[in-house]
Structures are given as structure tokens and as C-alpha cells.
Image 1: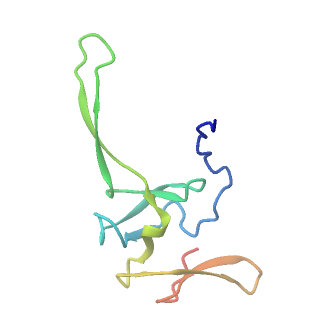
Image 2: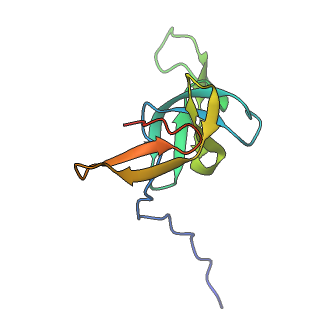
Length: 118
């Protein structure tokens, strides 16, 4: 008789071109068109948490005597494929490319505008 197998979580980190502090625009989903700053990246699941995007409401029970419960609104993660790097001065979303500088260091650049991010 076959046993139910539990789906294993991926343990390998995915190389992400989006980093903490980048400004991104959501290109798919209910928050399509919104822009925000990346608060956190989750490289194992290939997801990012963007400020003000994909908000979820949590109801928290009181933990101590006499304390009231509360409702907290917080950002949930978005898959990295659903966001694109955003140029704040040109007001356009673009793919990112990695290139080598003359000194041998790796840099990130927006494909549409040629703007260097790092």
C-alpha cells in the first residue's frame, strides 16, 4: 500500500536579481501596477516582500490578562517573477542584466534605460 509522501521544501537557494532596498513594480496579480521597496527577499522560495503590496489582515488574540486583541495589517510575499525592477527617475519598469565592469566587478543594469543599479 503506497504511503502519503510529504512534499519536500526546496533547500537550494535561488540566485535572485532583485535585492533588499530595490524599487520594484508588480506586473501580475491583484496589485498589478503598484510600486514599492523590497523589504526582504526569500531566496529559498524565490519570493520577495514588497512594502505596501499584497497586504494581509491578521487578528491577534490578547496574550495577557486585561490586554485587548488587535488587528494587524502586514505584507505577504510575492513571487519574484511577478515583480520587475523600477526606475524612479524614468518611471519605467525594466528587466535587469548583469554585466562586468572594466575593473572586473559585477554590476546590475536596467535593460530599457541602461541605468546602473549597484
